[in-house]
Length: 505
Image (cartoon, rainbow, N blue to C red; front, side, top):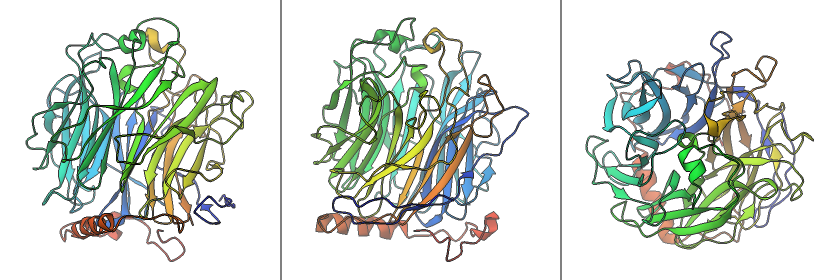
C-alpha cells in the first residue's frame, strides 16, 4: 500500500492522502490474451457502494465488458450485460454506462459487423437488479453512428432525461478514417428510457466541418455541455490518410444548452493552440477531451504537444461553459523535459473539489514506461496539489492492439480514457495496466487496475457555493434517494462486507 503526504493547496489545507492497494478489475486470461482498456467508473445514486466499471476489449477481437463491485471498488466481479448480441451485430464495442434516479443501470454499446467493423447500430440494455440480469438490447440509433456518449439528468421524473451525443457519418467510411464531410456531431434526449428520442440537433458549428471526439457533461439547472475537437484543415487525420503528424493546430470547442438539451448555443473556443501529440491512430477511437460540470462552472482537460513533449492541460469556465479561462498544466514536472503526460480524466466531488488523473512518463528517461498520477484542486482549478503517483509498477504502452492502417503505423492502442469517480473525501481511479503482460512488445495483454484514494480535503473556507445551487443539489439528492426494493442487497452480489476501516469516504 502506498501512503504519503500531499502538501496543502490554496484554499484547501494540509491532508494526509492515502491510496489503497492496486486491484486488478479484470482477470488475466493468458489464452486469448485480451486487451482491456478505456475504463469508465460510475456509482449507483441510491447506494454508493455499488460501483460499475465498463471497458472496451480490443483483442483478440473487439468486445465490451462490465465489472461490478458491492464494496465501493475494493473488489470486482464480472457480469454479462450483453448475453446475446442483437441480430446483425457480430461484436459489441465502446460501452457507456449511466444510472437513472432509481438506480436502474443503463448499458449502451455499438454493434459492429463485417471485416471492417462497421457500426450497424447503437443498442441499450438495462438492469434493475444491480447487474445480475439485463434486458435484451434494443436499438436506439441506426448505422454509421460513432463515438456515442451517454448521461442521465436525474431531475426529470421518473426515469430522468437520457442524453446521447454522437458523430454521424454520412456514408460508409474508408478504412481508418471518415468519409468527406458533413459528418456532424449530433445530440438528442429521451424522457422514456430511450424508447423514443427527441429530434437530433447538430452541435458543431457549420464552419467547423472536421469536428470529432465529442464529450458530454451535465450540470445543474438543466445545463448540457458538449465538447469536441475542431481539426481545422487536418484532413490527413480526419480521413485516415498516409502522412506525417499534422504541423498545424486544432481547437477545443464547447457548445452548451441551458434548457435540458432543447437548444444549444454556438460553440465557444476553449483553446485554439492545441498541437497534435502524434498521428490519430483511428479517428473512431480518438480520445475525447475530459469534460465535467459543477455549480456554475465547467472544466475541460486534454493533452497536447505545444511544449515539445506532451502535457496535460485543464481550463475552467466560470459561467457554465460560455467563456473559458486560459489553460494550465496539470502535470508539475519541468516544462519541456521530454517526458509525456497524457489522457487526463476529471471528476468533481460533492462539495466542489476537482480531481484529475493522467498517464505519466516522467520517471522513465526513455519516455516509455508509464505510471498514473493524481492531483486535485479545492479552489475551483486556480491551483492544484503536487502530483502524486498512484501506481507501484509501470506499464508499457507498446503492449496492446496494433492496427494495419496507414494512419496507425507504428502505434499501439492503449485506450481512449481513464476512469475516475470522486467522493466527498476520496476517489476511485481506474486505468489500463500491463504489469502482468508476458515479456516482449508484440503482445496484447492489457488489464484494468483500480485503486482507492482516501483522506482528500474538502474545499477551503474561501470556496462559496450559491444558496440556490445548494437547494438544487438537495432536490436532486432527494430524487436519488428513492431505492428499489426488488434489487438484491450488496451482500447478495457476493462482495466483501465493508468494515469501518474500509468504509467509503
